[in-house]
Length: 593
Image (cartoon, rainbow, N blue to C red; front, side, top):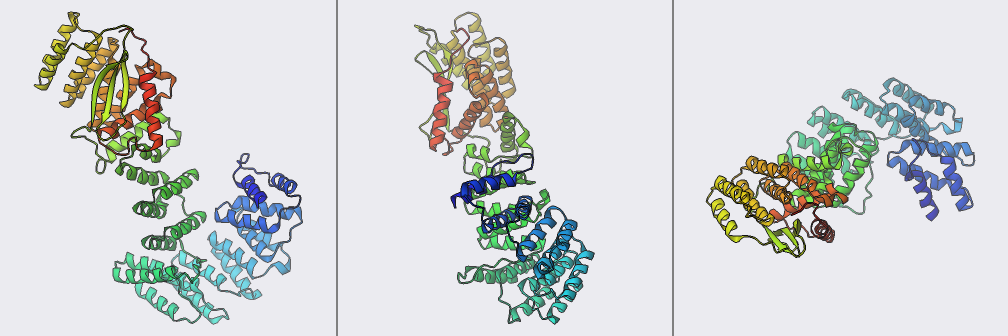
């Protein structure tokens, strides 16, 4: 068993070279380790699993290798499976050529049936009908499957009369119709909005002694009723499907034939019944058949992801989305945004960002993805995410200790805080804040005299009476005042002027501006101010600057809104510890104070 797992890994997980995989080399390796040939049964099980995953080319390569080796005997069932694979990978002509070269004994109802399936799958109507008549002449119509194939062919083009004609022919033969036969007819009536015809066919199906009613038929009927707004009948059909599904003594037999519309009907019904795992099996089958070709086909996986989210199964939804992302499915970014929205509602910006995807984001730089995420939050999420803070739930204050003046961002509901070193004082420095200056500026700002406060600060600065610490405190007070009055343009103009003057404390002003911008819901502009803060802090260049900066910004957003997710998980606390190490304890200033 261990050797088979290793062989499966080599066949499916190890990357191949430009689409070419050396099956012979892998099998030789397996033979060396097993001391014998790989059993045919194991290889066929692998082929079956590959087919379920939609990896038809690799499954066919294994069959080709088995034939080339000449040590494996193929049954009629094996030939039929191989015809099916050849039709999907190389086309109907190749499948037809393989069928013609089979021995007479191998040309039976199984191989005939799978070649017919290839024609139907590729919509080759004339060839399918010719082959069906050939089967009739050779006496290969031993089951309802060939009739069902032809009915599917007609049903896809809405030729209901021809569908009923094939059903009538099936009834006259020695073969009785099965569940799939009746379901195809029911779906055909549903597709042309003929509810009476659909009900008539359903009653006939229920009255047949050889038929054991299945949940899938009722699920299809329920959705057709729902589409016609016959809600009572839809509910009744759904109840019948639920009873059969909940009967543990009945094996959940999968339907062999489903029209493309049937998949949507069945999956929607299963979602309504809460059978999400069963629904996912049908989604996978629908996907393997090549139905997910464009964004227009996203309604089926969309309904399943929405159901997972409603049930609170966010992790399962995430795994499904990741699986489809790896397969590069069209429109999967829309499914990612569903998860992103849900985590935003829960107040966890970090995981919301991890789940965020936009079309083509794999080609973008990390900085651009961060900007797009904040732009999405700002423009699309205002209905469920608190963009603007009427009152910030964290405090910002300057504190001087151990030779550093730090900006402390302290959330009300959390123990963890962010400390950012803005000034590094020389050793033995005795700088302290001039409280008189600060009190005067504070009173002017509180009374709304912002221009007067700015003018007075400039006069004091020109007189040489202000230290850099005084300058930082007073500038912070003035910037806070302008931002509280929503005068962001004026505040940013002052920050630009101080930057040109190369003030040693100006990086702190950009950080304070970033705080105010995000509190007013201007996320993208806040991130730009954070980037200016980063550019003015040389020591942070040695770290993963964009990552550190973005983490800090998300902490600020969560803290100011009192979101409990901030700092809650152990890895989040580690992130915060590392962030404080970078921003406070390891920061050095290359400018003189």
